[in-house]
Length: 514
Ligand code: ATP
Image (cartoon, rainbow, N blue to C red; front, side, top):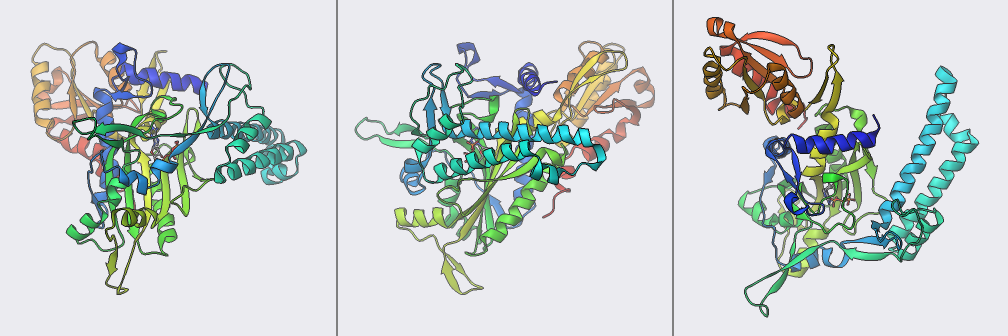
């Protein structure tokens, strides 16, 4: 199936089964804003718990906070967002469509990479076992030509970004003959900077109102609480502060479903370390974060690191963890060594000292920060993409299933009386009433058992328990496993333990190193 096709199916599946709805749908929607439905919210909550527990539960030196979305506006001046939280935008004069100039060039580079990879794959097929990929990449004239063209564009692009040279950015687009996907023309405007922050007014009267921003990242709420937490929690460096919360960005081009939204959620952890140790900790967190992703079991080849071409104004090292979405490898998480930039800026703008007295070194310093910042929604999308499958069954029927990691599944156990009558429904309810305190169960008596299995496959329920006439005699039920469709008979008294063992968050957390 073409990847574009897969993506379309994911979007319609998300809607059909109550995972994600377009916001304000009955009013024709609001661009790049989405609501999570009855299944989506459960999956999202489980995902957030997986992250939160991996940070706060597993690390004695990481604590959580929940800071407000509104903050003093000077915070955004200090952090650099008022002056520099911009994206370069460009319009196509014919289609009137707006694009991010950097994304147009990145997509063009990705196409060149694809072209090179296809040449290499073709050759690999042709030469079979004797194929030496490294040598081929270095010597095949066509591949060498493509590669040097790609490297040259990349170097110009990185320099233009670093120099904030908008004319050169436009020139790269022109020289690469990048056309608007809608109009097909290369009739471009100048490149301009566009600030991504939303603002609103706080205060009752128009004269007294103060301009405040909807936070574009949750991190600043952590920085300005650094001293509160350090002092009240008696935290010793190195230590971390974790937070999950909404962030808002007026994205120029909001597309690709929940990948790029104007209102989204972040899970961020700021780790405070002594100056000079930040790059070591950066490597440490890179490793831990990749492990967290890979423990979900979608395959290590689905993830990769991508180092930044342009370091943000606050960073001395930065990398992204990318996941292979149906539309290519895309960032789901950023890991940044933010130096002491933020704390120093807040010291300067607030006039308050944010230093740490290190008893071991017997001196005070402004801590350096390594941050891990992951988008809940992008992560959600990667999980849907990784778990969506279509299978042909022996009887020729098709089934669609979400092979969700059981700990993340919205429903852990479906409780299904084979028929409604003969006391089976009552028995099923009894089981449900007992188990619902332990994990998410769903009682379902409507339609044939086959249809009910399909419904639960589609929302990723890892186990179904069927109550039949025999159950009334032997107090046993049939458990059906989602992925293998295997069935086994188990005692009702064992049901709780079996499902807990297979679906509890511990099963994921145990795979992680501390
Ligand atoms: P991009 O380059 O894709 O705009 P970014 O590098 O600006 O992303 P960060 O500022 O590093 O993103 O934010 C950290 C994380 O927050 C990202 O890795 C992503 O998962 C998430 N995120 C950022 N912007 C959005 C958005 N508009 N919609 C959904 N998630 C987002």
